[in-house]
Image 1: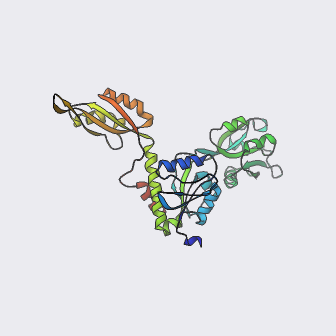
Image 2: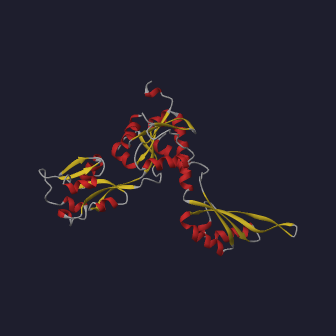
Image 3: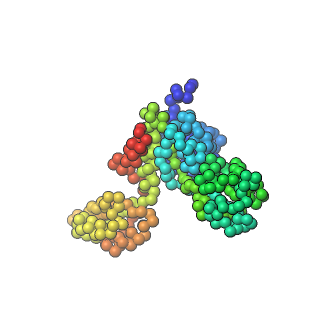
Length: 342
């Protein structure tokens, strides 16, 4: 069967590396668990998206297969998009911040020797020893971005050596002068006597959702599936930074309680609190001497918000995790359609 005749929608996911677990975890948290019998299988399915075939590949292959149209949708690091698919109109970033896989691409040089007093890319470019006969040797797994960076920063005499993995050991062995690599915490650089320098950070990367433009334009099922993934991810990412807080508030009326809550801007939630009476039996009568207030509170502000609630008459604060926060309309999706003319 020709690829253009296939009925399945193909979603490319990473086959190896530290992002595999996080990618599968995100999809599971979004209600789209991937069913894969074992880690050695390179095809899988998502039961809630029966028309989707999951294909596991390396980052480079996901990008190139998206560009060629053999994949319709993919999740990959943004650095891979910049390295393997720059300027390609058929490659669309649907969601540019999935919230994991954070790293940055940076130039790193030895702390000692001829580089001891070098603290910026500008100073590195001004070193007199780099000539056509003796170029600066740079080892990297991302040669396209490496060459672009060197050219833009005035490093004219450069020799690019391509290698995958353990690049930090190359300068120590004399195999390269400097490295151009992805950095997360910087611990490995420091352990190998390397340092980052001013102006050496090229880009900041994290996991992104990408798609093939032609697939989105020519196949309604691809567009609908991509929208579903986008909306689930967007709603989940909004929710994970929030707690749902329910608290009993002393007060004679919902209006009085609401006024007190809104006097504290950090307690107002997404659009405002929900306030209603708490009913109980007193002397055989149904009475409401408290009101319940429900609001979303940012996780990082939880404790200070609880203190504020106590100060304005709150008690018995119940805190629950949030799974999804769906807007009335998927504004991000509409903006995407407009931006790319879909």
